Image 1: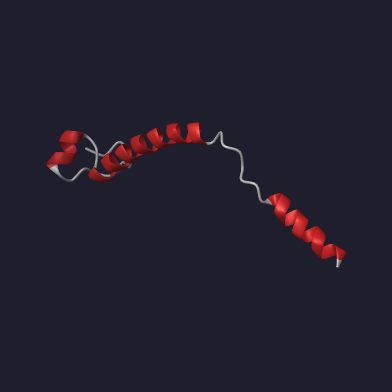
Image 2 (image 1 turned 135 degrees about the vertical axis):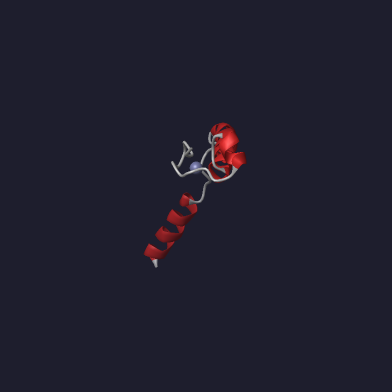
Length: 66
Ligand SMILES: [Zn+2]
């Protein structure tokens, strides 16, 4: 029996019983965690970008005058 994720042969009886290799099982659970985090990000992204470009432009104009 092979792992359906990476197609490598499952070595341990535990993996065969689970039907997936331990590494891929962990990847799957990490993917689930990431999906939850992405949902949180969607709510945070609405923030406006930080100011600072105005300050840099003023500094450059100041330098051009001298
Ligand atoms: Zn695998």
